[in-house]
Image (cartoon, rainbow, N blue to C red; front, top):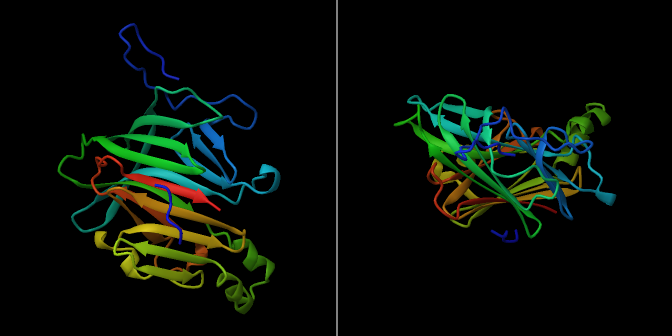
Length: 273
């Protein structure tokens, strides 16, 4: 695996007025999008509700609605019984000093999570990659809780259509799914590889010690690969979409800084090949 490169309305007192959501582009097909860019391999869209999506670009910059990687920012609270409760962004709380753009280089948004806590997140297009960083700016309502900020990239079930095409022939389907893979590089620099017929073991999904530095998902079924890296004091956690499900159902690549307040230089890097 190659190493990865690491509109606001104001009063006369210049106090920002919070939007119901982020402002939207008005261009055809981009309504509901706050900021977006295309480079050679990917299209990224940041929506007015704080969610995002990465589309791989095919010939003539064509995209397909079902070939995408959704992105989300959440605040994970670890409850006393070990259960993780995720707090989603409250879209009504979002604000920014930037204007909507279809040629994004860098942009920053701020907002609150449902149930408490405030955050800031920055998005940057750099050398063909998307760089995302986020930090907790206020733990109001959640002080004293065990918190972890998360930026999650979701690998969807790209194989559902293929199983239908094969008429439920599981032997043929498994032969196809074996062509896709997940490679994970741990903080100890040890590499683990799985094909898409396999179930991710608990070592990749449970404790903080299992957090990884890099992950690469090669999807033969769409002939593209996605590369993820945790730079600085941060790590990746890989979870199945459902417990004990094979990888062809999809998975989550979750990035977290070591501290919810995000030490300087902690960045989530995403590339498309």
